[in-house]
Length: 157
Image (cartoon, rainbow, N blue to C red; front, side, top):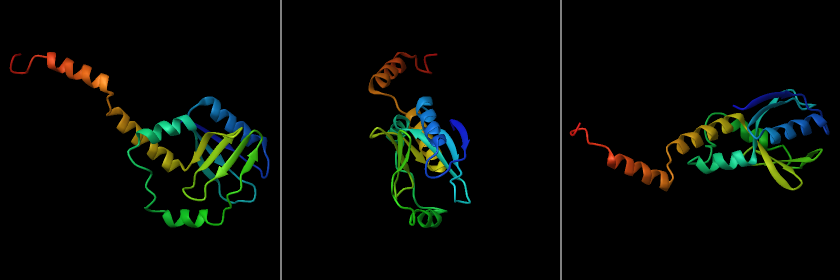
C-alpha cells in the first residue's frame, strides 16, 4: 500500500518526523511508517493517510472498521495508559485519540493526514474500492441503460 518508509524517531523532538509528515503530505498517497520511539522496545507501525484520501475511503466504505475480533483485548490495554497530549514536530502537531487508535496530524490548525493502524487502512481501502467500482453515477447509469436498450436481443442474433 503506497510508499514504505522506516524512520527512527527520538523523543521529544526530531526533525525526521517533520520530514516524513511533509513527504506524506506532498506525495498525496498513503505512506507506511515504522516508528522506533526512544524508550520503547517495540516498533509502532502505522499508515499515514492524507486527509483527502481518508475522506474518500470513508465516503465509499459501507461501514466503519469493525472493532471486535482477535486482538481487541491487546488494543484496549495498549490505549488506556497513553495520555492524549499533543506532540509537536516542527510545523506538525499529532493528536492521538484515546478511542479508536488513530492519530490526527495537523499543520497550522488543519488536519492534513491521519495515522491509522495498517489493518484498518488496508480494510478501508479495500472496502472503498469494492463499493466504488460497483457504483455508477446517475448520468452514467442512464447512458448505460440506453446503450443496453439499443442492443439486439440474443434471440434476434
